[in-house]
Length: 303
Ligand code: BG6
Image 1: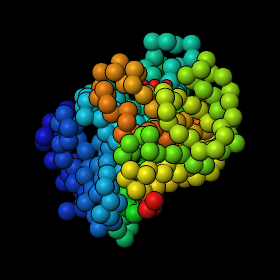
Image 2: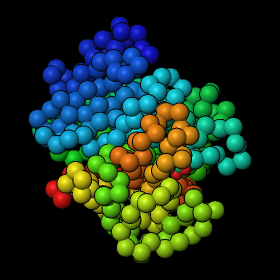
Image 3: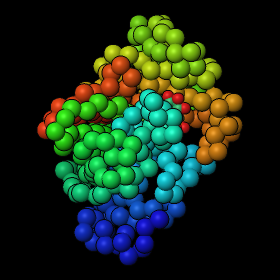
Image 4: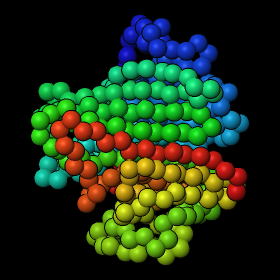
């Protein structure tokens, strides 16, 4: 929770009157609230976490759990958590936080700008003594989110040190669906995936993906657009990407949902994660002085 005076100060320095305001969000955490002609949206400094995007008159596109915790040290359940610098558990370090530390870090707000009806928010975080205890490298990480008729998310990693490093990353996007059994994912037909619910066996996707049980898959070497067809809400969500070679598809289904303290028992019916990412064998190697930019672009279309 940020002191009210600090939030008011951020608003004075970076806010755009009536368009982008920095206010206290859930749990008193600072968020940027966007209200432009093209879209409404929200992004928290906690985790540089986008939690809402509604283009035009459309209904909310992102899922956020009613049971999410909104507090320092916890990841927000829903929206778009950033997984960095590792995905899932850190190899060789079982005590390290799952999905890395970026999603529980307090990021800095760098700028908010407007181009036409779209609003771009830049936040950054970088290495410090705490991050070096878990990951001994010098890095600078930017999350740039543009809220307009499309939602564009860019994650830029820079190597500020003198030796190369490896990292994994994911824009762990939770999409809201009307009813999961009436949704299908297109765009991964014929793609090989690792099935995390079946001892990491490698399998081949045949046709569209229907979510009919716990689903936790890493699709490999994926570059194309993925489309979430939602028959209940009568809409399609198109997720495009650049510089990302894996796509994670996740739905916890019934038992896992019950076991998660920050997730409602029935919420598995109304969400699916489609994660633009570079994980496992597709981790990125970054040389000193170099930067890597991964991008995810979300659009809505009628069904
Ligand atoms: C997915 C992983 O990306 O995130 C799953 O593939 C994991 O294995 C899920 O359960 C949620 O992770 P967390 O740490 O947010 O509960």
